[in-house]
Length: 236
Image 1 (cartoon, rainbow, N blue to C red):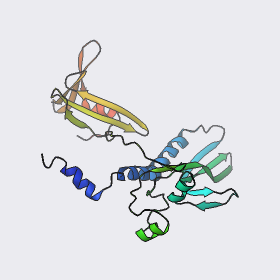
Image 2 (image 1 turned 120 degrees about the vertical axis):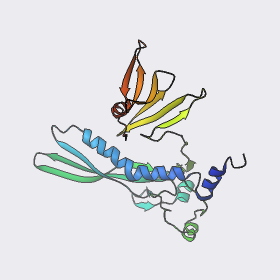
Image 3 (image 1 turned 180 degrees about the vertical axis):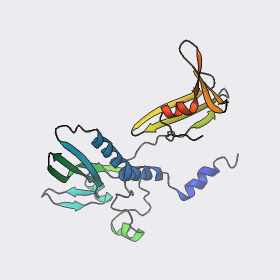
Image 4 (image 1 turned 60 degrees about the horizontal axis):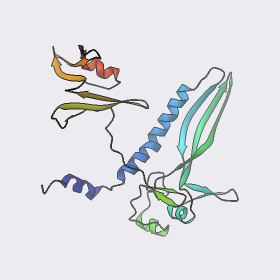
């Protein structure tokens, strides 16, 4: 029992509690936003004229002053001035009609930036630079600044996509859970020994499951085909 929390303690020796927030945000800014734009661009109606959404870019946090000028902003300034620590979003938009093509990069909005993320103005600063810019060098970051107030994301535990998890329930029965992911769609899948679907791990050399329909009739389905129907990558 002495080593019950050993793994957690060892993890916290080299990692921060808010590290997952920062890593998740960096991944969203670097990859997920562009993936979303690409999916929207591919779904646009292109009958009359063709609209293509290109590269999306996230700038560094800044503010627009009353005279219209733009200047960089640090987290401490956003707190003192009751402002949102955010950065501009620019998107390349191309419109084609016949032989005429017009392409332009436009600002489509702003996004709040997590402090200490790659998009933060404090990113890459050494301790001396942080102090000179009125930032606490021991601040772990991982939060937004919205209208001068610090806001954090609520942590939610979820299953990794396209990865099966097999465990036992309270009755000691095996269950398999997974989220099938394709694009932006996530489909939960649940296989249990004692309910509608009963797994039979091997039958005639191939993995299969027995499925009971509404009339309580049992049919055998090849599990490889079943997982492919669910858009789950699988290896035999």
